[in-house]
Image 1 (tube, one colour):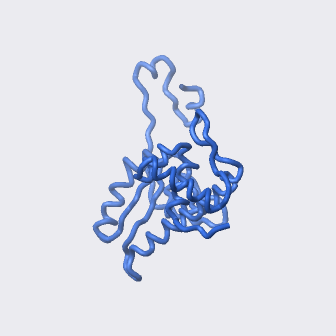
Image 2 (cartoon, rainbow, N blue to C red):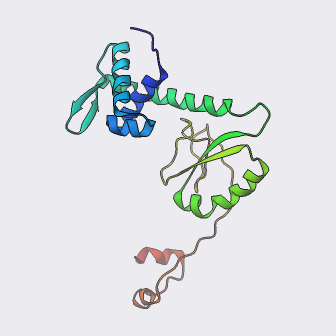
Length: 191
């Protein structure tokens, strides 16, 4: 097997694997469809095996491609970490910090909290991932995850950073039809 010549080939492979098409991968990478195809073909030539087969639904990964998914994802994560760490001078609070947060908290709560942080550390770049899905901290998808539940597993640490007051609201006509819940347990009987 030949030595891998380009990280770009692996990025194209991973993009096609995750996007399911050359077009989606090209859009994600900001390159042309032809460039992605050429990079995947170069990688296939380097490793000596077919990684994708064409179908009416796009490109289908072969068994070999699927077996390489986690390794390629780990390499991409390591590359992203390298770039982020290299962007910050030693001892200086700077660089990129990726934070995963739910859509509600990312829109309604976090901006105010981050404003003061950004004023104190102007060389800090915050990348927010607004998603109601749980980000994988162990796989380093993000650096920090803001969650409304305690972390699970021994490799994660958690700290309470604030409280968010919540309220329950209903239209007056709904309450007149269904009654007003008086305790939390009453909510189970409501829409």
